[in-house]
Length: 438
Ligand SMILES: NC(=O)c1ccc[n+]([C@@H]2O[C@H](COP(=O)([O-])OP(=O)(O)OC[C@H]3O[C@@H](n4cnc5c(N)ncnc54)[C@H](O)[C@@H]3O)[C@@H](O)[C@H]2O)c1
Image 1 (spheres, rainbow, N blue to C red):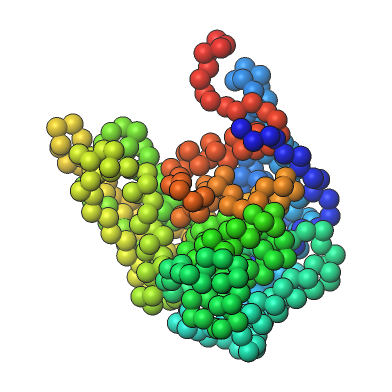
Image 2: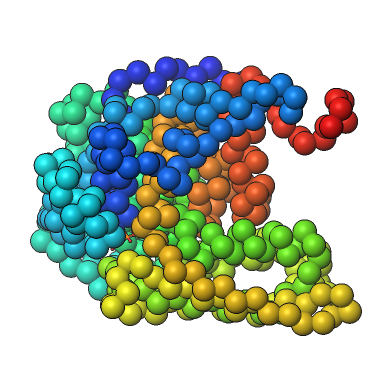
């Protein structure tokens, strides 16, 4: 096992930089401010609400995670954002329609209105259903990346931040596969200079963050930092990174249910998932190229949880289908249906129907907060590159080369907590319980 790290103290302000200031980003910012003013509770956030068991069961040591590890308290967070749409935080949150205007937005209007998005590195080629005037101009993609780096430095100085983190909350970009342009930093920088179409805007933010030593998490399924050039540079510069795609809604349900079926050796013949949603994310995903990026991210989970190669008679013939339908009347309150065809003893079929009336951004907001605080912790602990212990938060967890991603939410949760125990020099919890009375 690696030696336990020294964790530097969390002193000073932490700047949380959000490329994309739409539904998810404004919901987390408004939520943090509401919690700070004592108007609401940070429900869904492990860093704010969860406890962690330490030592043996009879020791009765279960502090809150935030009392156990040194995390930046909410009153020392400062927010910044970029968006091609120039709306300030209040207007953007009103448009997103996630939080009730009278109950949750008007009481903090002064604060939300004060956050105005910086101009974005944006190109409608990569997000077809969107356009906006608040964009950077530059002869090359490298110029744009350098402008983002300058924004980062300016934000840090203007807001007197000790450290920064960046979490991509921008729209899902079109599907791209990593190519030779993404192999090495030299090739990547050359491709930016040549305006190569293989370089999407989200990659410019990821590059800028890593070069500035700012931890980076990707909440969308597009590549962004998921290729060797940036992964290796993150390690070289001691920068923690994580991705991809916040685990909310249907995939959250899938990674809760599927491990249970497998644990009980129940077979699966089909899993049909369909969604209706009407927010801007739904509109962007109406474009087949952006949907393809999302589909790839959503399909992987079941395969990795069920291990059909190990259990061919249970899972080899599983028919898995995911659909997203843009349906404006629903707004952010999407509905996700799952029809699950399972089979049991002697092959007898059964069906499970899940109808999740879900609020996507309500599920995503605490993930953004936790990722920001945990990535800052990783950084202060000297941990760099892909932070697999944060797979818990992602639909398509990035992994080190040669490793398969861990999708089972219970294993992910265990791994997250054991990592915190390891960081603090506490024993790992194995649940063995043979060395003391149960
Ligand atoms: N809502 C969820 O629960 C959830 C779950 C998993 C993943 N995601 C992903 O998170 C992202 C944000 O979701 P949302 O519901 O807030 O969407 P949204 O459409 O409300 O917000 C996205 C914002 O990103 C901006 N944007 C697009 N390209 C940009 C660029 N290059 N630079 C800066 N800003 C840019 C858009 O103008 C928009 O305001 C999406 O990619 C979505 O797929 C969301």
